[in-house]
Image (cartoon, rainbow, N blue to C red; front, side):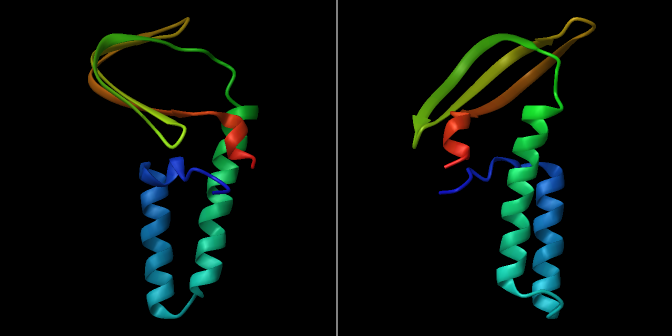
Length: 106
């Protein structure tokens, strides 16, 4: 798999997928071109996070569930606290999906 499709389940990813589906159904776009747009979206998001994001965040919480499948870790935390140098935010429940970034470029 060229990319892990990590960002397609985000709000922007789901909106893009829905719009592309509508365009394919209307005959505006071919299914092949829609797929290429989604693959480019995944690559662009990965590149943006690698090059544009400079801040670091620490996360603390109670580990509810963890899984490792197909080189992807999934963690579910309850009562999580996100903290960076300026702010602190408490979240009731958060799901973290993590993978080896070297696998994204293969």
